[in-house]
Structure formats: structure tokens, C-alpha cells
Image (cartoon, rainbow, N blue to C red; front, side, top):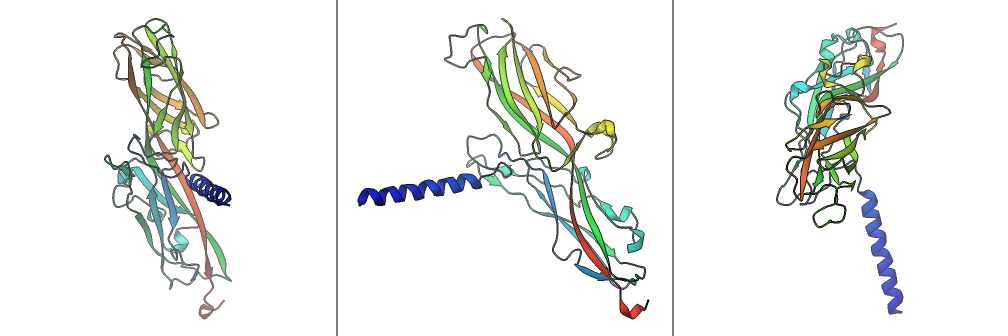
Amino acid sequence: MKNRIFSIILIMALVSVSVFLAGCSEDEPSFGKEKTFLGGTKGLEIEFMNGEPPEEVYDGGDFPFSITLKINNKGEYDIPEEDVLVSIQGFDAEEFGLTLDDLEKNPDEDIKGYGINPDTGEPIEPPEYYVTFSDLNYQGTLSGNHQFPAVANICYRYLTKATTDLCIKENLLDTQDTSVCTVSGKRSYENSGAPVQITDVEEFTAGSSAVRFSFRVKHIDNNGNIYGETGGDLCDKALANKNKVYVEVDTGMEGTLKCSGLSDGNSGEIILTNGERMISCTQEVRNPSNRIKIVNIELSYDYETTEETDFLVKHNPELGD
């Protein structure tokens, strides 16, 4: 009987752990003192505030209303206010007494990302931010009720920081001594919370005086669009600017670092194909010794997401037909 009770308790405990682990998503920041970053696969998220826009308004120019968007930074990059642009589309601005410029604005302050408590590793959650478009008012007279879409578009400049490590040996061709590390093989890596990240890091021997390592740049969160930040305006939607990411690799080592596809050797703009691109780098080793060397990688890009709702403009019967 005791064994049966113990078995039931054990099963319940295992189920609880499974449920907890299932609820831990890569989308949300996690924590631990041993971590460099909190992680997560999101940048900015937007949503319409309840009642803004209202579900129903009236025509005739006597029913002003506002549209308010809440912005949450789910990643770990602080964005200057000038690098965030919010716009509303889906209806004719002039019909609602505004101009196109009135339906496009920057936030009033920088958008802070998640921080990390260095003592506990716990997340420091950023505040929520709000952008309001005021004084919308349907000016005309409708023959009947009409449903309008409201599409919120947010474009912002974002940065992913990533780290991995290289195994440097006094004899790079020695595969027997594994006391510090092994040159050839997969490498662990970490990314700051962001929609574009590095994955699949591997290192290889490249002769007696060099090592080679590769990593994949990947669009993890497929709910947005990527644009090169060197295009000028935020989210320059020219076809030639789509799916571009600027990559910078820093090993902190003496000697030549050359990465395939990066125009400046250790930095340059790449184009993601089907949401990803493999990069291979060769690092000259001038001072060999048995050690681990940290590699820092930065990915910068413009990112765009949208959110949609709708509202009803009703004909005011007091206005007549």
C-alpha cells in the first residue's frame, strides 16, 4: 500500500514538472545566474488598447475618438525613440479629419528592453509604453453603417548580441589532449532576446596556425519582416533591402579574421534566404596556448510587425439620408 501511494505521488510530481517545462517557452525571457542573456525570440509587441478605437462610432463629424497602442519590448535591446516608428493604416485619413502625417509618429521616449540582475540572474522587466493617435472623427455622411479596418504597423531598429567560444590549443592539430577543450565540434552559444539569432555553432581545425568556426544567422520569430538598416529610412521596403542583416564578428584575437560573405572580413551585410544564412570564419592564431576564447557576434537590422482590429462607423439617423 505504501509503495502504491509513493508511486502515485511520484507520478504527480513528474506530471507537474512536465507541465512546468511545457509552459517555459523560448518566446519569453528565462533566468539563471550562469546566463549571459535572458534570451527569448521576440522584439517589440504591439496591441490595441481596449476601447481605442471604440467598437462603434458615428458619422457626421460629431464623434471624435482615439486609437491607442500598447508597446512591450520582449527583447534585451534599448531602442532610441527616433528608431521606432508607429503608424495606423486601413482607412482614408482625410475622411477622419486627419492627414497621413497625423497617423505616423515616434514614441515620446526610448523603449527599454529587459535587463538582468547580475546577482540573481532574474529578469528586470521594462515598463509598458503607449502611443495615442487622437482626434479621429468621421467627417462625411454615410448611407448606412460601414466597417473599417485599423492596421497598426510598428517598425524599429534592433540589435541581437550573441556569444560563443573557441577552443585554442598550443598544438591545434592535437586531438588527444582534451584537458581544457577540444577544437573540433559543436559549440554552446547564447543570444540576447531578439527575433533574429545565431544557431548551430561549430569549430574546426584549419591547419597548425588557424581555426575555423561557422554559425547560422536565422530569423527565429517569423511574425515580422526584416530590412537592412543601411537602407536609410526605417524599414526601407525596397526589394533590394529586404531580408538583410548586418553581421559583426569579434574574436578579440590577434591575427586575421576572415568570414565568408562579409565584405569587411569580420563584418558586412548578408541576405537571408528562406530566413537563414550560414557564415564561416577563419581565425589566424598567432599566440597559441590552451584556453577558451569568447567570441562576440552582433546582428543589426530593421524589423516590422503589424496588428489589426476593426471598428464600425454607424450612420447617425439624426443627420438624415
